Image (cartoon, rainbow, N blue to C red; front, side, top):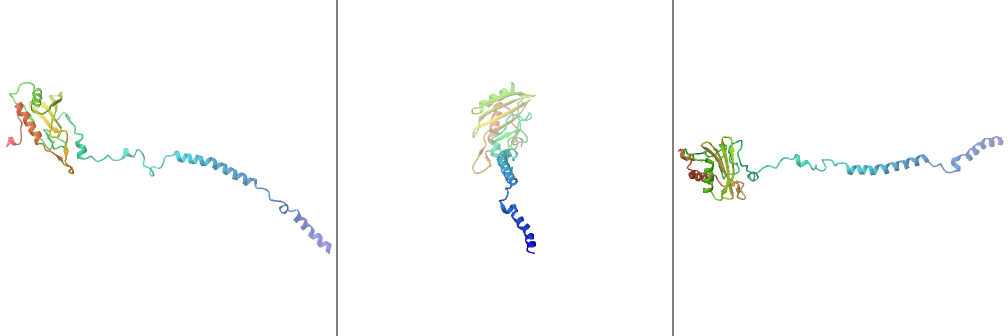
Length: 228
């Protein structure tokens, strides 16, 4: 009976002695070690590349405005002062230009002008070259007059001169066609009195100037007063 019991217990003892997990340490996990080293190598290569790409890539337009955004921005609004700095001279579509709305020291025979006048009428008794007579009258009646342009146009002649004005130089323009002389007399400098934005001056001085030239020539200068 005792032998039978010992024979039954012996295999269990031997089995415990043959259990490898009790006799020695565990085997290293080489697969896990390899995977960790592989991941570390991967990130060591990828991270510098990601940083380089982020530095080179353009920033979002919502974060920093584009340098070209000024091209699409609306133009700054013009003011009477800025417009008075760029007043065109010369004929426009073969006609005398109207007075600029920002320049009160102007008179023009163009009917679109706010300060308009009638063209001069060459006297029937007048002989000789009308444009040369006009040039002589300007040089005689105006201070520091300088003839700038004399040119032929279809069916007429154009003359431009500069003379002394009240606050600088004035421009006189004439368009001679037949016995009619269209003109514009305009100050080249518009004066503003601070803090007002309305230009200082009027067309009376220019009207008087043209009257003196017409009288020197003996030409007729129609006006609303003469028609009363």
